[in-house]
Image (cartoon, rainbow, N blue to C red; front, side, top):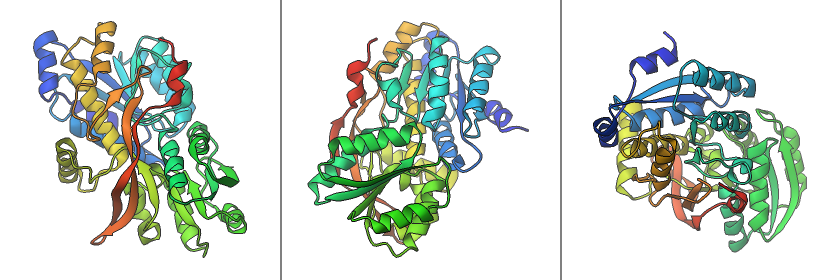
Length: 381
């Protein structure tokens, strides 16, 4: 049986919000989730999926159809068309990668469907390309990097070497870091998406006079780089956004990541009731610590259920207004949408530490309070 069939057969719905929806409207919301479930980035998509499923567990008014995009834009486009035309979904979600989001989201919203992003946040969709039907429940791509640049400037880092994959999230991210960093950028490399050999890049880093390497390499890319970097003998400090040092990645990197600083809107040690429950429930359900991707998937489902409790998805204006209220207890703590439907939220600085035998992250401070992206000024809706 295919994953789609397994999930659909177990079809999920409502906590109290979903039950309120059933009482008020007597209908279901059908969600199409296109995410990465195979290949080098599979761990990210699996975590988003699992977080979403956990939050929606038991919700009989929420029907979910899941497909694997294989991290290929053409596959994602085909799946989106199928979900809209054949599956008749009401809402779509799930995409991890910004290049896939740019291929899918504008077409989805143009066909009158809501899209809730649990991860990808390209600048084009936050500014002039914004839509009343598009909500980003994660961040705009620049956010963690802008906070990282500010923190680096305030903590004695003077010269950095930048590295990221050559796709929208990579270029957006480095733009964000440079916009707030007050020191010197002494080197800047954009690698191939999915690259695993970084010998040439590490040689350039070694030869530079940078005191810190700031990089964004999600999934398997980050694992490969950090293992090679740790074995290279280069002693320059390492910083990055949480995507390069999230829980799934740290499990594979191990002690080589200890001491690394990284920015994130979420951490397993955030002390709020919703997060304490989420971390415990996720571990009990899946037998592993949650990642920020799982947290984003979880919050995406909670947002959807909160809107279901207030409006019928067939009434687009009312459902949009219900989503804009963001009336749910986020695992991040305070959460609200800016007018461009992107988050207003705190960004934390974390440090990679060891707790017993587990390499994980610990919050050491706030890098940016009530952060929101700069692209919203160009959003007209």
